[in-house]
Image (cartoon, rainbow, N blue to C red; front, side, top):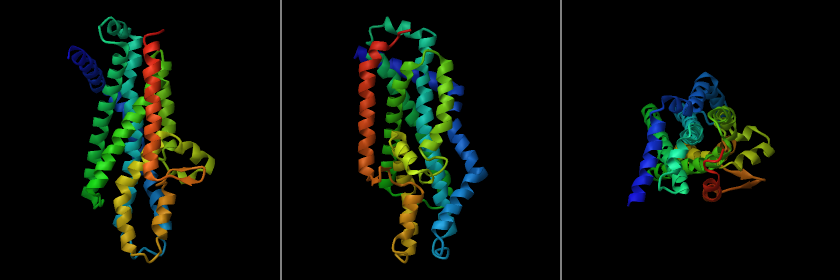
Length: 306
């Protein structure tokens, strides 16, 4: 029980450091805010144009408000998926900060084992990132619901929460390994800048991966965060996509829905093979477990080294 209290104490301390640092919270949401700004400026019109092209000849069947809600759902998908990368990263920066300020020296003289110290960092990041992302998701769904119907089922909501949790754990596990190589906050912040710049393209937040050539798509789809984006996109906007397809009532032989799945990258495609959502779940879980094993083996050995 004493060990559990010590572990939870470290975890709570790490969470408080993150939540009381307004700068970390701001920069963790910087990429999602950039996506929102780009959407307002021109992404919305670009996505609506692609949607109108796919719905050509069906304008009198598919309501304009449904198409706009569909595009709004794609925006929220990009915001949440980006947040699942930037928030865990910023929450884990405390590892480098503690190392730079030699706080880790104080921790290592406590009875808590080194792996428990690292696990406290991990759990604090997962909890912090999950809570913050769920707040953003809840607010986003609330805004979209005020604008119109999203046709979300209870099952969609449960799977959506599960995908967010998996994305949080997966990103945190991956970045825990990355943090091993940073000795100071300058390097850590520089990497964050690079990450913010390219992550939106890799996961398809700025534009669908279908706009890239097949080789780039294959590489991007191997990134677990991209798979998480595919899951969130399906669960968040799948309801309104089904509704639009039902409005067509099979008059197009399913061509519209199939075009949507292809154009807006609803499926993970590796080497020409189309993965089911269950296979995407399995792949992300496997990669996450691999990162956790690496963390378990390597971190206790290198923790605190200069």
